[in-house]
Figure 1 (tube, helix red, strand yellow):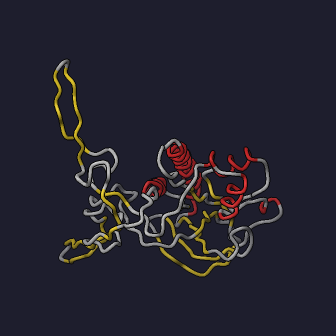
Figure 2 (cartoon, helix red, strand yellow; figure 1 turned 135 degrees about the vertical axis):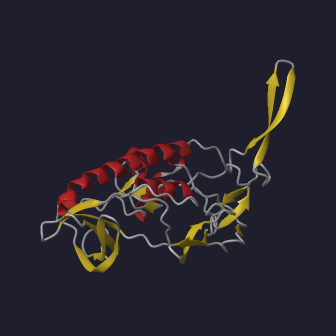
Figure 3 (spheres, helix red, strand yellow; figure 1 turned 120 degrees about the vertical axis):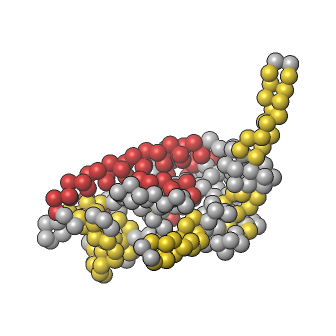
Length: 280
């Protein structure tokens, strides 16, 4: 799975939501009807607004299966020993974190292998799907599969520059305007992308802070993937990948962040000014 890297919190939330159970009989949440979100009304200055919040019944998963570790109860019995005496206490289930349910994949289950268990042919096929270089020995292929960042490279940047055709204005945040476009050259040719321009040109120095956040998110996700590779189960857990944004210069001289556009429905759960949506 690949995710936008410009926001550390968003990247990590998507990363952990992507570690779903592979099951054959997922159940759609009745409260959110599988969408993972519910609309809640808020009163603001004599106006009523409806905002999407994470479903409190399924934890935003949409489709779930009962947790097998706690039989859907959300708690487990733990035995404490005090010398010759024992005591049973209820503790929150470590597998489902008290939900009693696990997020379920919405597509047919796929048998995954750990990188160390893959053959050279299997690794090349996986890399080909990811549009990564497929030549090299087994050790080089393993290293390439373990690389967290999805980049717009594969040698293209040594031969020329990626090109981008702007479609138009998309959205604005507190500090930046976002424009939609399409890659016209490079490995991402014909894919949708976005570029983000600071409203205040003086703030462009903060682009380097964005890149630091991406780097930190990549470090955490790499550790997360390595931890999952040690998971002992019938199938390997999903690996998480992160799109690495590029810094381009417009003809006007302005510096912008360019990255792939990710389709989906998202809810704002915090802001740069410190606001937090308590539903998350």
